[in-house]
Picture (cartoon, rainbow, N blue to C red):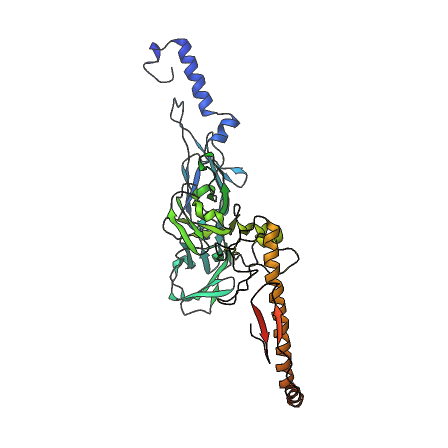
Length: 441
Protein backbone atom coordinates (compact mmCIF):
# COMPACT_ATOMS: atom_id res chain seq x y z
CA UNK A 1 0.00 0.00 0.00
CA UNK A 2 2.07 2.86 -1.40
CA UNK A 3 5.18 1.28 0.13
CA UNK A 4 4.36 2.78 3.55
CA UNK A 5 4.65 0.23 6.45
CA UNK A 6 2.31 2.35 8.59
CA UNK A 7 -0.44 2.48 5.97
CA UNK A 8 -2.27 -0.42 7.56
CA UNK A 9 -3.11 1.79 10.54
CA UNK A 10 -4.67 4.50 8.38
CA UNK A 11 -8.44 4.53 7.97
CA UNK A 12 -9.56 3.57 4.44
CA UNK A 13 -11.46 6.85 3.92
CA UNK A 14 -8.50 8.97 4.93
CA UNK A 15 -6.16 6.90 2.71
CA UNK A 16 -8.34 7.53 -0.33
CA UNK A 17 -8.41 11.25 0.45
CA UNK A 18 -4.59 11.40 0.69
CA UNK A 19 -4.21 9.50 -2.58
CA UNK A 20 -6.51 11.93 -4.40
CA UNK A 21 -4.61 14.89 -2.95
CA UNK A 22 -1.31 13.44 -4.20
CA UNK A 23 -2.70 12.90 -7.68
CA UNK A 24 -4.02 16.46 -7.82
CA UNK A 25 -0.62 17.77 -6.73
CA UNK A 26 1.25 15.80 -9.36
CA UNK A 27 -1.13 16.72 -12.18
CA UNK A 28 -2.41 20.22 -11.36
CA UNK A 29 -5.00 22.03 -13.37
CA UNK A 30 -4.16 24.75 -15.84
CA UNK A 31 -5.12 27.49 -13.39
CA UNK A 32 -2.89 25.98 -10.73
CA UNK A 33 0.04 25.70 -13.14
CA UNK A 34 -0.18 29.38 -13.91
CA UNK A 35 0.52 30.19 -10.26
CA UNK A 36 3.84 28.31 -10.27
CA UNK A 37 6.99 30.05 -11.45
CA UNK A 38 8.58 28.69 -14.58
CA UNK A 39 11.87 26.82 -14.15
CA UNK A 40 15.23 28.43 -14.80
CA UNK A 41 17.26 26.97 -17.66
CA UNK A 42 21.05 27.47 -17.53
CA UNK A 43 23.92 26.67 -19.88
CA UNK A 44 27.44 25.49 -18.98
CA UNK A 45 29.81 26.84 -20.23
CA UNK A 46 27.73 30.03 -20.54
CA UNK A 47 28.23 30.74 -24.27
CA UNK A 48 25.57 30.56 -26.94
CA UNK A 49 28.00 29.65 -29.77
CA UNK A 50 30.33 26.62 -29.75
CA UNK A 51 32.45 24.79 -32.28
CA UNK A 52 31.09 21.81 -34.13
CA UNK A 53 31.55 18.61 -32.11
CA UNK A 54 31.67 20.30 -28.69
CA UNK A 55 29.17 19.32 -26.02
CA UNK A 56 27.50 21.63 -23.52
CA UNK A 57 25.41 20.98 -20.40
CA UNK A 58 21.88 22.22 -19.86
CA UNK A 59 20.40 22.38 -16.34
CA UNK A 60 16.75 22.86 -15.40
CA UNK A 61 16.00 24.23 -11.90
CA UNK A 62 12.33 24.43 -11.01
CA UNK A 63 9.70 23.84 -8.34
CA UNK A 64 9.25 20.26 -7.12
CA UNK A 65 6.38 19.55 -4.67
CA UNK A 66 7.41 17.21 -1.86
CA UNK A 67 4.07 16.28 -0.28
CA UNK A 68 3.12 12.59 -0.80
CA UNK A 69 5.16 11.97 -3.96
CA UNK A 70 4.08 8.72 -5.58
CA UNK A 71 7.12 8.83 -7.91
CA UNK A 72 9.96 11.28 -8.60
CA UNK A 73 8.89 14.44 -10.35
CA UNK A 74 10.35 14.25 -13.86
CA UNK A 75 11.69 17.06 -16.06
CA UNK A 76 10.59 17.48 -19.66
CA UNK A 77 13.03 18.68 -22.33
CA UNK A 78 12.17 20.26 -25.68
CA UNK A 79 14.30 20.91 -28.76
CA UNK A 80 12.14 23.23 -30.76
CA UNK A 81 8.73 21.52 -30.58
CA UNK A 82 10.20 18.00 -30.23
CA UNK A 83 10.03 16.29 -26.83
CA UNK A 84 13.41 14.78 -25.91
CA UNK A 85 13.55 11.34 -24.24
CA UNK A 86 15.57 12.47 -21.20
CA UNK A 87 13.84 13.25 -17.88
CA UNK A 88 16.94 14.16 -15.87
CA UNK A 89 17.65 17.51 -14.31
CA UNK A 90 20.74 18.01 -16.54
CA UNK A 91 21.48 16.86 -20.08
CA UNK A 92 24.43 17.17 -22.47
CA UNK A 93 23.75 18.30 -26.02
CA UNK A 94 25.68 19.22 -29.16
CA UNK A 95 22.84 19.79 -31.62
CA UNK A 96 22.06 23.42 -32.49
CA UNK A 97 18.57 24.74 -31.86
CA UNK A 98 16.25 26.25 -29.27
CA UNK A 99 16.04 24.36 -25.97
CA UNK A 100 13.40 24.59 -23.25
CA UNK A 101 12.55 22.60 -20.15
CA UNK A 102 9.52 22.09 -17.93
CA UNK A 103 8.98 20.62 -14.49
CA UNK A 104 5.70 18.89 -13.75
CA UNK A 105 2.93 21.36 -13.06
CA UNK A 106 4.97 24.47 -13.99
CA UNK A 107 5.09 26.54 -17.19
CA UNK A 108 7.78 26.09 -19.82
CA UNK A 109 11.11 27.83 -19.16
CA UNK A 110 12.59 30.67 -21.19
CA UNK A 111 14.48 29.39 -24.27
CA UNK A 112 18.20 29.09 -24.87
CA UNK A 113 19.40 29.26 -28.46
CA UNK A 114 22.51 27.15 -29.10
CA UNK A 115 24.55 27.81 -32.23
CA UNK A 116 27.22 25.52 -33.68
CA UNK A 117 29.95 26.97 -35.90
CA UNK A 118 32.52 25.44 -38.26
CA UNK A 119 34.51 28.69 -38.66
CA UNK A 120 38.08 29.32 -37.57
CA UNK A 121 36.99 32.18 -35.31
CA UNK A 122 33.79 32.63 -33.24
CA UNK A 123 32.56 35.39 -30.96
CA UNK A 124 30.94 34.01 -27.81
CA UNK A 125 28.44 36.06 -25.79
CA UNK A 126 26.51 35.13 -22.61
CA UNK A 127 23.31 33.13 -22.96
CA UNK A 128 21.62 34.94 -20.06
CA UNK A 129 20.18 38.43 -20.57
CA UNK A 130 22.48 41.28 -19.54
CA UNK A 131 20.84 44.17 -17.67
CA UNK A 132 21.88 47.77 -17.29
CA UNK A 133 24.70 48.20 -14.81
CA UNK A 134 25.88 44.60 -15.11
CA UNK A 135 29.17 43.54 -16.76
CA UNK A 136 28.98 42.42 -20.38
CA UNK A 137 31.70 39.86 -21.23
CA UNK A 138 32.52 38.70 -24.77
CA UNK A 139 35.06 36.10 -25.84
CA UNK A 140 36.77 35.83 -29.22
CA UNK A 141 37.80 32.18 -29.51
CA UNK A 142 39.99 30.45 -32.07
CA UNK A 143 39.34 26.97 -33.45
CA UNK A 144 39.56 24.60 -30.48
CA UNK A 145 41.20 27.23 -28.27
CA UNK A 146 44.01 28.24 -30.60
CA UNK A 147 45.58 31.57 -29.57
CA UNK A 148 44.29 34.57 -31.49
CA UNK A 149 46.78 37.37 -32.21
CA UNK A 150 46.21 41.01 -33.23
CA UNK A 151 42.73 40.75 -31.79
CA UNK A 152 40.14 43.45 -32.57
CA UNK A 153 36.59 43.77 -31.21
CA UNK A 154 33.99 45.68 -33.23
CA UNK A 155 30.68 47.25 -32.22
CA UNK A 156 28.32 48.05 -35.11
CA UNK A 157 31.26 48.05 -37.51
CA UNK A 158 33.50 50.33 -35.39
CA UNK A 159 36.65 49.00 -33.67
CA UNK A 160 36.27 49.42 -29.91
CA UNK A 161 39.21 47.46 -28.44
CA UNK A 162 42.53 45.92 -29.46
CA UNK A 163 44.53 43.17 -27.73
CA UNK A 164 47.85 41.62 -28.63
CA UNK A 165 46.53 38.08 -28.06
CA UNK A 166 43.45 36.20 -26.84
CA UNK A 167 41.66 38.31 -24.20
CA UNK A 168 38.02 38.72 -23.25
CA UNK A 169 36.38 42.09 -23.90
CA UNK A 170 34.44 43.36 -20.87
CA UNK A 171 32.07 46.29 -20.53
CA UNK A 172 32.08 46.87 -16.77
CA UNK A 173 28.68 48.57 -16.55
CA UNK A 174 26.54 47.93 -19.59
CA UNK A 175 24.19 50.61 -20.92
CA UNK A 176 21.42 50.55 -23.49
CA UNK A 177 23.86 52.17 -25.92
CA UNK A 178 26.02 49.03 -25.70
CA UNK A 179 23.35 47.03 -27.53
CA UNK A 180 24.08 46.19 -31.15
CA UNK A 181 26.04 43.79 -33.34
CA UNK A 182 29.50 42.68 -32.26
CA UNK A 183 32.28 41.01 -34.20
CA UNK A 184 35.95 40.13 -33.69
CA UNK A 185 38.95 39.61 -35.95
CA UNK A 186 42.49 38.31 -35.54
CA UNK A 187 45.19 36.00 -36.85
CA UNK A 188 46.19 32.47 -35.84
CA UNK A 189 49.38 30.46 -36.36
CA UNK A 190 48.34 27.32 -38.30
CA UNK A 191 51.30 26.65 -38.37
CA UNK A 192 52.39 30.06 -39.68
CA UNK A 193 50.52 33.24 -38.97
CA UNK A 194 47.43 33.48 -41.11
CA UNK A 195 45.77 36.46 -42.73
CA UNK A 196 43.23 38.35 -40.56
CA UNK A 197 40.04 36.33 -40.08
CA UNK A 198 36.64 37.61 -38.99
CA UNK A 199 33.97 35.98 -36.87
CA UNK A 200 30.27 36.10 -37.64
CA UNK A 201 28.32 39.04 -36.22
CA UNK A 202 26.41 38.43 -33.00
CA UNK A 203 23.49 40.54 -31.78
CA UNK A 204 23.65 41.70 -28.16
CA UNK A 205 20.78 43.41 -26.34
CA UNK A 206 21.23 45.10 -22.96
CA UNK A 207 17.94 44.79 -21.06
CA UNK A 208 16.42 47.77 -19.27
CA UNK A 209 16.70 47.31 -15.50
CA UNK A 210 13.87 49.72 -14.71
CA UNK A 211 11.81 52.20 -16.65
CA UNK A 212 12.45 55.94 -16.75
CA UNK A 213 10.78 57.33 -13.63
CA UNK A 214 7.79 59.65 -13.78
CA UNK A 215 7.09 62.28 -11.11
CA UNK A 216 3.42 62.55 -10.09
CA UNK A 217 1.45 64.49 -7.48
CA UNK A 218 -0.63 62.77 -4.84
CA UNK A 219 -3.31 64.07 -2.47
CA UNK A 220 -3.57 61.56 0.37
CA UNK A 221 -6.04 62.37 3.17
CA UNK A 222 -3.25 62.65 5.73
CA UNK A 223 -1.49 65.33 3.62
CA UNK A 224 -4.00 67.99 4.80
CA UNK A 225 -3.70 70.09 1.66
CA UNK A 226 0.05 69.71 1.23
CA UNK A 227 1.52 68.54 -2.07
CA UNK A 228 3.04 65.03 -2.08
CA UNK A 229 5.30 64.02 -4.98
CA UNK A 230 5.81 60.37 -5.91
CA UNK A 231 8.61 59.05 -8.13
CA UNK A 232 7.15 56.08 -10.02
CA UNK A 233 9.04 53.46 -12.01
CA UNK A 234 8.83 49.72 -12.75
CA UNK A 235 11.53 47.06 -12.49
CA UNK A 236 12.04 44.33 -15.06
CA UNK A 237 10.11 41.16 -14.04
CA UNK A 238 13.35 39.21 -13.72
CA UNK A 239 14.82 41.92 -11.48
CA UNK A 240 11.81 42.82 -9.36
CA UNK A 241 13.79 42.23 -6.13
CA UNK A 242 16.39 44.87 -6.99
CA UNK A 243 16.32 47.66 -4.36
CA UNK A 244 16.06 51.23 -5.65
CA UNK A 245 16.59 54.59 -4.00
CA UNK A 246 15.03 57.93 -4.90
CA UNK A 247 16.12 61.58 -4.81
CA UNK A 248 14.11 64.75 -5.44
CA UNK A 249 15.25 68.06 -6.94
CA UNK A 250 13.85 71.58 -7.25
CA UNK A 251 15.43 72.96 -10.40
CA UNK A 252 19.08 71.91 -9.96
CA UNK A 253 19.01 71.94 -6.15
CA UNK A 254 18.44 68.66 -4.30
CA UNK A 255 15.63 68.92 -1.77
CA UNK A 256 15.96 65.31 -0.65
CA UNK A 257 18.97 63.14 -1.30
CA UNK A 258 18.83 59.43 -2.12
CA UNK A 259 16.63 57.48 0.26
CA UNK A 260 14.39 54.42 0.12
CA UNK A 261 11.06 56.23 0.08
CA UNK A 262 9.61 57.11 -3.36
CA UNK A 263 7.56 60.02 -1.95
CA UNK A 264 8.42 63.58 -0.94
CA UNK A 265 6.18 66.17 0.72
CA UNK A 266 6.67 69.73 -0.52
CA UNK A 267 6.95 72.19 2.41
CA UNK A 268 4.17 74.73 2.75
CA UNK A 269 6.14 77.89 1.78
CA UNK A 270 7.25 76.34 -1.50
CA UNK A 271 3.85 75.48 -2.92
CA UNK A 272 2.89 79.18 -3.05
CA UNK A 273 5.10 79.54 -6.13
CA UNK A 274 5.09 77.86 -9.50
CA UNK A 275 8.18 75.65 -9.23
CA UNK A 276 9.72 72.86 -11.31
CA UNK A 277 10.62 69.55 -9.70
CA UNK A 278 12.14 66.31 -10.94
CA UNK A 279 13.22 63.04 -9.34
CA UNK A 280 15.92 60.45 -9.85
CA UNK A 281 15.85 56.68 -9.32
CA UNK A 282 19.05 54.68 -8.88
CA UNK A 283 20.43 51.40 -7.66
CA UNK A 284 22.22 51.31 -4.32
CA UNK A 285 25.60 51.18 -6.09
CA UNK A 286 24.57 54.10 -8.39
CA UNK A 287 25.57 52.00 -11.38
CA UNK A 288 22.20 52.81 -12.99
CA UNK A 289 20.63 56.24 -12.52
CA UNK A 290 17.63 57.63 -14.39
CA UNK A 291 15.89 60.98 -14.02
CA UNK A 292 12.27 61.87 -14.63
CA UNK A 293 10.90 64.68 -16.81
CA UNK A 294 10.19 68.04 -15.17
CA UNK A 295 6.97 68.53 -13.21
CA UNK A 296 5.63 72.03 -12.51
CA UNK A 297 3.53 72.69 -9.44
CA UNK A 298 0.83 75.38 -9.79
CA UNK A 299 0.72 78.19 -7.25
CA UNK A 300 -2.17 78.56 -4.85
CA UNK A 301 -3.69 82.02 -4.83
CA UNK A 302 -0.44 83.85 -5.63
CA UNK A 303 0.22 86.52 -8.27
CA UNK A 304 1.81 83.80 -10.37
CA UNK A 305 -1.66 82.60 -11.31
CA UNK A 306 -1.32 85.18 -14.10
CA UNK A 307 0.59 82.59 -16.09
CA UNK A 308 -2.41 80.30 -16.18
CA UNK A 309 -4.79 83.03 -17.42
CA UNK A 310 -2.72 85.13 -19.81
CA UNK A 311 -0.28 82.56 -21.18
CA UNK A 312 -1.46 78.98 -20.63
CA UNK A 313 1.10 77.66 -23.11
CA UNK A 314 3.91 78.73 -20.78
CA UNK A 315 3.02 75.96 -18.37
CA UNK A 316 4.39 73.36 -20.78
CA UNK A 317 8.07 72.56 -20.85
CA UNK A 318 10.16 74.28 -23.49
CA UNK A 319 12.11 72.10 -25.99
CA UNK A 320 15.17 70.52 -24.50
CA UNK A 321 13.33 69.58 -21.29
CA UNK A 322 14.33 72.79 -19.51
CA UNK A 323 12.19 74.11 -16.65
CA UNK A 324 10.38 77.41 -16.73
CA UNK A 325 11.03 79.75 -13.84
CA UNK A 326 8.14 81.87 -12.62
CA UNK A 327 9.70 83.38 -9.52
CA UNK A 328 7.94 86.38 -8.00
CA UNK A 329 9.68 89.74 -8.32
CA UNK A 330 10.19 91.76 -5.11
CA UNK A 331 7.16 93.96 -4.44
CA UNK A 332 7.07 96.77 -1.91
CA UNK A 333 4.60 96.27 0.91
CA UNK A 334 3.05 99.69 0.19
CA UNK A 335 2.29 98.84 -3.45
CA UNK A 336 -0.31 96.17 -4.20
CA UNK A 337 0.51 93.28 -6.50
CA UNK A 338 -1.09 93.18 -9.94
CA UNK A 339 -2.81 90.06 -11.22
CA UNK A 340 -3.46 91.00 -14.86
CA UNK A 341 -2.75 93.79 -17.37
CA UNK A 342 -5.31 94.12 -20.19
CA UNK A 343 -4.30 95.61 -23.55
CA UNK A 344 -0.66 95.91 -22.58
CA UNK A 345 2.54 94.00 -23.16
CA UNK A 346 4.27 95.25 -19.99
CA UNK A 347 3.92 93.68 -16.57
CA UNK A 348 5.90 94.06 -13.39
CA UNK A 349 7.67 97.32 -14.47
CA UNK A 350 10.63 98.33 -12.34
CA UNK A 351 12.34 101.76 -12.24
CA UNK A 352 15.83 102.62 -10.96
CA UNK A 353 16.15 103.98 -7.46
CA UNK A 354 15.39 107.71 -7.33
CA UNK A 355 13.45 107.68 -10.62
CA UNK A 356 10.24 106.02 -9.54
CA UNK A 357 7.37 108.21 -10.76
CA UNK A 358 4.71 108.92 -8.23
CA UNK A 359 1.02 109.39 -8.77
CA UNK A 360 -0.65 112.25 -6.91
CA UNK A 361 0.65 114.10 -3.89
CA UNK A 362 2.82 112.41 -1.30
CA UNK A 363 0.09 111.68 1.19
CA UNK A 364 -0.91 108.51 2.95
CA UNK A 365 -3.64 107.09 0.78
CA UNK A 366 -5.52 103.88 1.46
CA UNK A 367 -4.39 100.85 -0.52
CA UNK A 368 -6.49 99.99 -3.57
CA UNK A 369 -9.12 97.49 -2.79
CA UNK A 370 -10.00 96.44 -6.32
CA UNK A 371 -8.26 95.21 -9.41
CA UNK A 372 -9.47 98.23 -11.42
CA UNK A 373 -7.56 100.68 -9.21
CA UNK A 374 -4.41 98.61 -9.56
CA UNK A 375 -4.78 98.64 -13.32
CA UNK A 376 -5.08 102.44 -13.40
CA UNK A 377 -1.87 102.86 -11.39
CA UNK A 378 0.06 100.55 -13.66
CA UNK A 379 -1.44 102.11 -16.80
CA UNK A 380 -0.11 105.54 -15.81
CA UNK A 381 3.36 104.10 -15.34
CA UNK A 382 3.18 102.45 -18.74
CA UNK A 383 2.10 105.71 -20.42
CA UNK A 384 5.04 107.56 -18.84
CA UNK A 385 7.46 104.93 -20.00
CA UNK A 386 6.11 105.05 -23.56
CA UNK A 387 6.54 108.83 -23.74
CA UNK A 388 10.11 108.64 -22.48
CA UNK A 389 10.84 105.92 -25.02
CA UNK A 390 9.55 108.19 -27.82
CA UNK A 391 11.88 110.98 -26.68
CA UNK A 392 14.76 108.55 -26.54
CA UNK A 393 13.92 107.42 -30.06
CA UNK A 394 14.21 111.00 -31.31
CA UNK A 395 17.62 111.36 -29.70
CA UNK A 396 18.83 108.14 -31.28
CA UNK A 397 17.61 109.34 -34.69
CA UNK A 398 19.79 112.44 -34.34
CA UNK A 399 22.81 110.30 -33.46
CA UNK A 400 22.24 108.09 -36.49
CA UNK A 401 21.84 111.15 -38.71
CA UNK A 402 25.13 112.53 -37.42
CA UNK A 403 26.89 109.30 -38.29
CA UNK A 404 25.41 109.05 -41.78
CA UNK A 405 25.51 112.78 -42.80
CA UNK A 406 27.75 114.95 -40.57
CA UNK A 407 26.98 118.09 -42.62
CA UNK A 408 23.24 117.79 -42.15
CA UNK A 409 23.76 117.08 -38.46
CA UNK A 410 25.94 120.21 -38.10
CA UNK A 411 23.25 122.33 -39.75
CA UNK A 412 20.66 120.85 -37.44
CA UNK A 413 22.66 121.64 -34.31
CA UNK A 414 23.34 125.24 -35.44
CA UNK A 415 19.61 126.10 -35.49
CA UNK A 416 18.26 128.16 -32.58
CA UNK A 417 17.57 126.13 -29.50
CA UNK A 418 13.99 125.19 -28.93
CA UNK A 419 12.29 125.85 -25.63
CA UNK A 420 12.60 123.14 -23.05
CA UNK A 421 10.04 120.41 -23.41
CA UNK A 422 8.18 119.26 -20.42
CA UNK A 423 6.14 116.14 -20.05
CA UNK A 424 3.88 116.01 -17.07
CA UNK A 425 3.00 112.75 -15.51
CA UNK A 426 -0.46 113.73 -14.37
CA UNK A 427 -2.26 116.79 -13.05
CA UNK A 428 -0.84 117.81 -9.73
CA UNK A 429 2.29 115.68 -10.11
CA UNK A 430 5.44 117.59 -9.11
CA UNK A 431 7.82 115.37 -11.09
CA UNK A 432 8.52 116.26 -14.77
CA UNK A 433 10.99 115.17 -17.41
CA UNK A 434 13.06 117.96 -19.06
CA UNK A 435 14.62 117.54 -22.52
CA UNK A 436 17.38 120.00 -23.52
CA UNK A 437 19.51 118.87 -26.42
CA UNK A 438 18.95 115.36 -25.19
CA UNK A 439 16.81 113.27 -22.91
CA UNK A 440 17.21 112.76 -19.16
CA UNK A 441 15.50 109.59 -18.02
